[in-house]
Image 1: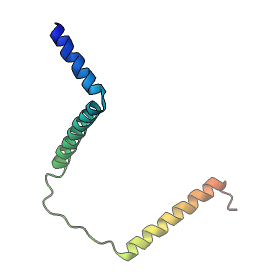
Image 2: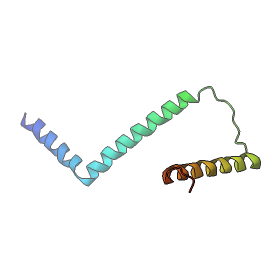
Image 3: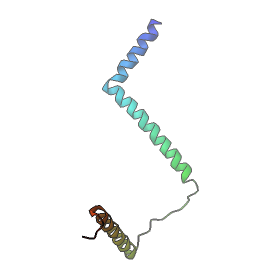
Image 4: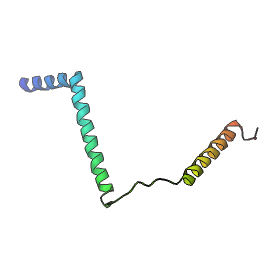
Amino acid sequence: GALLGTGVASIASLLSGAAGVAVVTSLFGATGAGLAAYKMDRRLADVSEFDFLQPRKALILAAREAAAERAAEQEREHDGGDGG
């Protein structure tokens, strides 16, 4: 009984220090990374080949214009929507 209590107390004191925090953080980090890798492996299991494609300039310009229009619309809504 006393030996078990001493062991638990020593483990608790170890984990309460900076080294214990580092150990627990490392364990949680490793577990999270393993879980993320497992889930990505399941999600991409059927993907056998992929490419990175360069978007066309026209598509980039259209996206910029659409973003500018949305920003202007939000600004008008924020100012009260009366146009001036």
